[in-house]
Amino acid sequence: MALGSLAFVLPFEPLRPVLRALGLELTLLELVAAAAAAVVFATRAGRVAHALGRLPLACLAAFAAANLLSAAFAPADAGLAAKFALRTVAAATLAVAVAAAPPRARRVALAAFAASSAVVALLSLGEGLGLRALDPFLARFREHAFEASGGRRATGGAGGPNQAAAFLAAGLVVGVARLGGIARLAFAALVSFGLLFTYSRGGLAAALVALAVLAWALRAERRGVLACAGVVAGAALLFLGHPRFRERLATELVERAYQARYRPADAALRLSPGEERAVAIELVNTGPRAWLPSERTTLHAYLYEWPGGEPIAVWRHPLTRSVAPGESERATVAVQAPARTGPYLLVWDLFTLPSGFLSASGVAPALVPVGIGAEPPAEIALPEQSWRRGRAQLWRIALAMWRDRPLLGVGPDNFRRLHPAYGGWLGAGNFPMSAHNQLLETAATTGALGLLALLGTIGLSVRAAHVARAGPLAAPAAIVLALLAAFLVQAQVDALLEFTGHYLLFAFVVGTAAALGTRTPSESVTPPAGDPSLVA
Image (cartoon, rainbow, N blue to C red; front, side, top):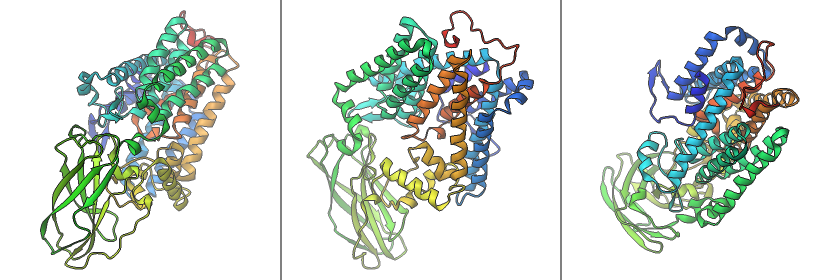
């Protein structure tokens, strides 16, 4: 029951921590995982020692060790990096508990995760169809409401749409493997529509590839699995009839939907130290979408000491009316000069809730040279990458971090703290973000040691499951292979292991892979009646 309870709540992590102790903030999921592991360790002590020798678990422990070592030598924020490294220790510990648990406990956990995925899919359907009564509940888990060309990207109880999509892709695999007949097809349809309402391209690709792997590995159920893959593909074709979904597949929505042209009233400013002055600017909406007050559209004015990398002051001007495409809005911001004299730079940048800062999507902000008790800078020239923050730019930054510290990286979770400096980004929106690629994130933050350990964990888990395919544990082996395939596909565009639910799910998969070779003669592999997931 302990592992089953954990599996059911994996997609749901409240934003606020529930326990603060010893400088750590523990989430609900981490507490449930700790309780589940404690139950297994207390009741299966003999099996724990046996499980420790399995290679996938040893490699996951090496990954945790690499994270701790990287944190110890991190060039910045070593304390925060060490706290994050403890998450990998928790993952390795849970994986041992899963491997040591009895087969029935893992079966119950798989059933619970499939049921949880159905709940996520129902929430995603409601959110995607405009049922705003769900918002107070969903706000407990998500960072904010996510928009997609005037519609809502579903989060289904997760922190964001891509996280929800990854859970749904994994849940689809488990449910399809466990169910049969009409129930299997109905489950695939439900989860497919929930997944599509997240508008996650990586999640959709992960689901289709995982089902293909499951069909290959689960030979006895190949036709049924392929029929479910057809359901997913058919649902995607239905969604292609909507322009919002076609836009999402074609390119990043924000780069096309939200555009602006800035016309500052002053080409340059000269202020006395401490002087306050009203500075005006005209904004023209050059994109196809309106700027709406309900989307928290806000003009930001950032003041930088020139040259410099971090703003020393910021002023905000929320828009109070809708600005349709082609219309303009005039804004005035009271700017106060700092006491220190010298050259400065004023940067104007627009924020909307669906798109974030427009500069992050390649819309160049307005630059106004400022002189405080001095002449303004004569020339301000910055390359395009100073503003653009797409995945390609983030990947290049991750590689640059890895080149700088090839063995240990810059420290666990430090990519989101150091990427503005590596990117040379001066504009607004220097908010924390991941590398949007799990392998590059791992290489950048934990170096070659962490990357090799992670790849080794995945490779050895695949090997254990592949070997087990030929025996009586073919079905759970097929599930492991398909779940790892889903993880690897979405890991190319998202750094999933930074999220609690996903690193715990990864630990569960690795622990299950390790358990495929640890059966004792007293533990029967004969499935209970009505459980087709374990039919060889």
